Amino acid sequence: MTRPTVRLTMAQAVARFLTRQMTVIEGETVPIFGGVFAIFGHGNVAGIGEALHGVRGEITTYRAQNEQGMANAAVAFAKASFRRRFMACTTSIGPGALNMVTSAALAHANRLPVLLLPGDVFANRLPDPVLQQVEDFGDGTVSATDCFRPVSRYFDRITRPEQIVPALRRAMQVLTDPAECGPVTLALCQDVQAEAFDYPQSFFEEKVWLPRRARPDEAELAAAVDLLRAARKPIVVAGGGVLYSGASAALARFAEGLGLPVTETHGGKSSLPHSHPLNMGAIGVTGSSASNERAAEADLVLAVGTRLADFTTGSWALFRDAGLKIVGLNVQPFDAGKHDGAPLVCDARVGLEALGQALSGHRVDAAWTARAQEGKARWMEAANAAIAPTNAALPSDAQVIGAVHRARNGPDTVLVCAAGGLPGELHKLWQAEAPGGYHMEYGFSTMGYEVAGGLGVKLARPEADIVVMVGDGSYMMLNSEIASSIMAGARFTIVLLDNAGYACINRLQMECGGANFNNMLADTHHVELPRIDFAAHARSMGAHALKVASIAELEQALRETKYEPRTTVIVIDTDHLATTTAGGHWWDVAVPQVSQRPAVERARAAYDKARAFQRLG
Image 1: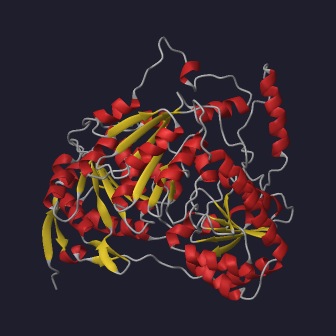
Image 2: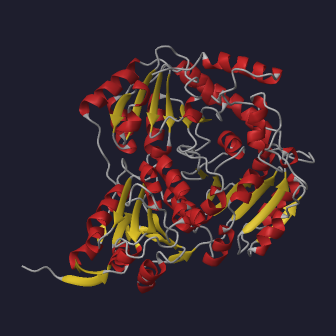
Image 3: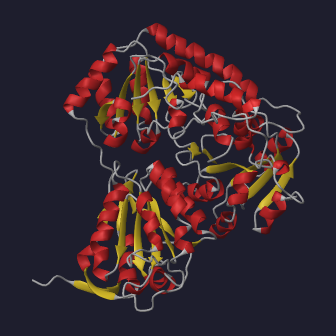
């Protein structure tokens, strides 16, 4: 029997396939692809470009300004959608493609789905070397897109039009699988994009993708239950997997049932409302004293949906109990078994519900719970003091956070940030009450993510009030998607803190005994220091922009511009040295063993002392 077919170019098959993939959100069947970001060049304009034009009524193509920026926005869209929906990005070959490699690594580190469709060289090789082709003297198969291999969960190069059928099917499996989830790269040879093939019509039938909820293995569950029953001072470390699983309510019930203190990673912050009495807040290098004091004493850590990265574990020097046990509740076995943890491989919501049922009636010592709550009360006194308004000529980052919190932190607010000193202050001080209200890209700590991330979050959650906080250094790296936000009608607010340099790394440099060098603008080699008018720069891209001179003016501006119809940029000068000294923990940044500078020798002595607490395995 001959199956019905339809003759399409490979690029047309890709475009049509994307429009047929669906999911279900709150009972409504919706397209799983939220759109396609595209910057066209010779490697994709005639193929994918023409194909996307043909389906423009079924899927939106967004014109971006920078390939890394658009891919960052696509990753932010997936994160804000809790991995239930995602986007595709297409570029030409060469520099356009390679601009997305950083974003691929960002998505890979954060376990976030994005479909990358870079153009590639001619499969037939007749015109080689083509414009922007990378030639390897010893391997004729090498292309620039090979750079995506180590930062893609699945990579394929399409050299024949029929190869796109198994490649796209595999791509969807990876993009929608909670355990495998991450970036997929399909490198599309530019001649093959234009080649036709008789594709089976069944390939374009509508398909609904739903998240898999893996149940725990009975033996692993029993072992985890035994460990939790035996623990005297257990804590929970909530990671991003709690949010992606929709497990916030299950976590609250579980913690309340056992009286367990809950701590939050950057990715897991907002898993519980900040006001929840068992939420100790941030843990680790940028953690609260409430969380870190409990972590130092804990004899068991239930790590839910977290990679247990160094900022969470204080470079594995935070947990001081010699007999510490770890239960790794995670959909990915690689993460579940880290540091000799007892793995509980399953969905976060299902796993917490199973643990809660098996431990029904069991509670930890009431004194442990009470100490945790007393520690939180002490921490909140310190945190509130840090964000309180002052009349300082140059306010601290914490004081700016306080102004944003007072003026704009509501039930529909999403705070977006990524790199520099702000993540540490926000992790400690931002008080998120709703899941997803804190959107931090700290798995890869990508400078330049913030503005593009704000665009992606707004596209995912158009009803939300998106507030981006960004430093001048990160803004300078990548800001052009302000123009894209104007084009898309996706308004959000940017609070730009200008401290005249890379202040976060300058402080780290000083802590390691280093001299002030090449971080703050004033400490760089220069003939003349730049005088950057950030407000004027933002206005030139179509934004509403203003500069304020005080915390009071900032609060007023934030309130007045909440409903401004365009993206708004509010600039404020800040103190590059002031940080919140309360909370926090040591972080392993290696200090030179030998130096002629006494400051470095002192820093090395402190470093060696701190390393004595690090755990191995």
